Amino acid sequence: MKNLLYSIIVLLAFSSCKKFLDVQPESDVSKEDLFTTEDGFKEALNGVYNLASEMSLYGGNLTFSNHDIMAQNYDFTDINYRKVASFQFNDPFLIGKNDQIWASMYKAIGNCNAILEVVDSKRDILFNGNYEIVKGEALTLRAYLHFDLLRMFAPSYASQPNAQAIPYVTVVSIKSTPFSTVTQVLDKIIADLTEAKELLRTADPIRSAAYVVGYPNKTYPQTFPEAKKSTEQQSGSLFLQNRRHRMNYFTVCGELARVHLYKGNHAEALSNAQEVIDSKKFPWTLQSDFFSADVEQRDRIFYPELISAWYINYNDQMDHVNDLFSNNDALYTPSITQKNIIFEEGGSGTVGAYDWRLRQWFVDVSDNNSADKAFLQKYRWNGFPQNNMHPLVAPAMRLSEMYYIAAEASFDADPVKATAYIDTVRAHRGIGSFLPKTIAKSDFISEIVKDARKEFYGESQIFYMHKRLKRDIINPNGMIYPATDRIFVFPIPVDELAYRN
Image 1 (cartoon, rainbow, N blue to C red):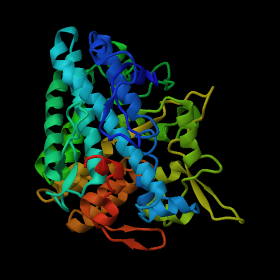
Image 2: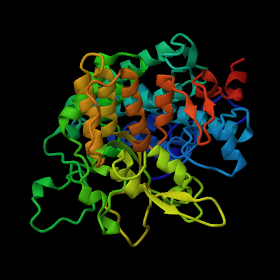
Image 3: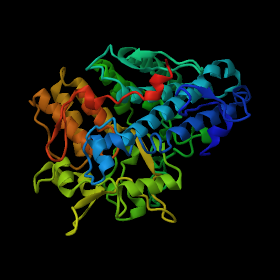
Image 4: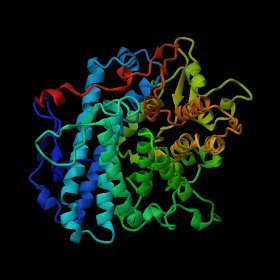
C-alpha cells in the first residue's frame, strides 16, 4: 500500500526546474480511468493518507522534527540542530527541510483536488454513504494541510490578518494559484470543513453508538464485558474501519475548533470543541493501561484519547522514531534538568511529582563522561515478535486539546468552568491539585501552555500555540526569542517565488 497512490493517480511533482504546484502524470493510468469505480476512489483517498504519513510530512517532519526543536524541547551538540533551535532560517539544512514540507504538502493537496474535481460527477458509483465519506475526508484533508501550511509560512491572524499568506489550491492545474491573505485562507478552510462536517454527520460510522474506541490488541480478562471492547476493526467494510486513523467526523469538529480559536472566534471554537467532549467517544486512558507492567500491554501515548492519528506502518519509520527518541544513542534528548523544568519536577508536593507523563515517558541516564540525558519513551516500539497494545501512530489531534481550547474559549464568560476544563485534564494525568477559581487570565493562559507543552511533547503542536498567543520562546539557558514574525514565519521557498515570475 505504501506506494499505491504513485502508481495510479495524477501527482503533483516537484523538482528544481518546475513549479511546486505543477501537475505531472506518474503512470499510464489516467485520472479518468482511476475514477471509474468505487474502489478507485477508495484507493486514491487511501493514497493521500499514505503520502501524509510519510517521513516528509506527519510521519516525520511535521511531528518529530523542527517545530519541537524550535520549542526548545531538546538539548543538542549537533550544530545543524542548534541552528534550527535558534531559528536560522537561512541555513541550508533548515531551508531543505522547509522546502520538502512545502512541496510534499502541496502534492498531497493536489491529490485531494484530483478526487474532489470528479467526485460529484461520479456520485452514482459510490454507495452506502461512501460518496459522503470520500468527499468529506478529502475536503477535511485539504483544509487540514492548508491550515498547517498557514501556521508555518504566514503570520498569525493575531499578528497580521491581512498579510499575504499562502496559495489555497482547489484545482488541478499547471497554472500557479494566487496567494491569499491570512483571513482569506482561514475563511476557505472553514468553508471546506463546514461542508465536510455536514457530509460526515450522517455517514461516518464513528458517530454510531456501536462504534467503540479502544485498543485493537489489548488482552482482556475472560470476564470483561464484550460491550467495552473496541469495535474499530469490525465497523463494516475495511474502508470504514479504524476511523481514528483517518479524518473522521470528530476530527472535523476538532479542526474547526482549532481554526476558529486561531481566528479569535471563541464561541465557534467552544461549540466545536464541546461537541467532541460531549460525544464521550474518546475515553480517558486508564492508569492501569498507562503503567502496565506488561510492556506489550502498556499504552504510552494515551491511545483511546486520540481523535485522529497518522498510522506509521513501515519498519524504516518505526526505526527512525526509535532512533530519534528512545535508543541508547537517540538524537532528540533533553537534559535531565531541562526535562524536569518542563514537567515541573521539584520534589514532593509539586505538580511534577504526580504527573504520569513525567513518570512514564522518560528514562534518565546519568553519565560521568557526558551530559545527563532523558530518553523519551512515548513512541518506543518493541518490534517483533512483541505485539504492542496499539499501533505506532503520530498523533494528529487529542481529546486533551479540545479541553485546552474549551478552557481558553470560555474563560472570559465563565472562568470557573474554564478552570474545570484544565483540572479535568490534569486529573487524568495524575495531578490532583486544582487551579484557583479566581486566577487571572494571563496566569490561566500560562497554565494552559505549561500543561500543553507536556502533553504535546514530541508532537510539534506547542510551537503553534506560542505563535497564536504571541508568547516568547525561551531556550534552556534562559535566552529569550521574542514573539515576532522573525521566529514564527517560515520563509516561502525561493523556487516557489522564482517560478511565479
